[in-house]
Length: 317
Image 1 (cartoon, helix red, strand yellow):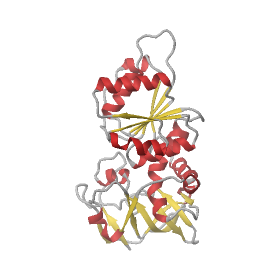
Image 2 (spheres, one colour):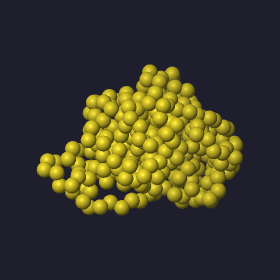
Image 3 (cartoon, rainbow, N blue to C red):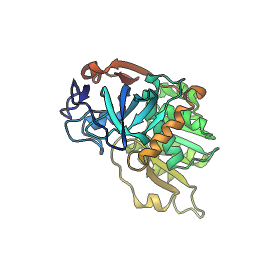
């Protein structure tokens, strides 16, 4: 069969012939129809993610496929070295979930990973309660924009967002954001704006950036020996587009209500992540979740992989 294969971390995958897979006793053989190029897949293929497989391997962590019974499903977590970007792959039966007829292949493949990032973070990690306030740090990308819509659907009382581009504010507000904080300002100004929002009440932070902006929020949450305990804030890191490391003063934890945690592969079980995506798929059409997409045949993976676009790229098989 044909598949995209990563032979070197510094080069895009090549479309080539590989052996057909053989499912184990707890796996099912599936015929792939679409697989998205998410940020996670890019990082894995570049050897820059903690879950990057050894070379060579077929990239792709999830997609849309047909079971041998003819049922159309979303699938995730094919075992390395065989990924989603192949004509066929094998996955554990528990890592498949039916897709509503109202959601097309391209949308389902594109929306699953970025939508899951906030759905799982809010419900599985932060245990969100309706009416709570959510701050989304890094809301201008596909995942951040979906996080606004999903937080709104799940009952967030107030949604604060940050972004590098002030021109995106109007669009983010249309998606459901109540306040916008520009990241292109001095550290002191950013800390001040975060502190103002914390004073109004922030219960959960969905952090797609880490780095300086996350550090500014942690600094803003740090009190200076107030007589009463600071309000609880569940800070959930999801990505590191702003930097992979930051300095964390011990006093920031002792003098604040911050609870730092992450959401992703390893902190949430694979089964829970697939379940979260299945729940989200049920409301895509009803709520009108939006994600910008573009598609390309898997045979064109080597060139399409290198093209730059804000739209989520989905390879069709």
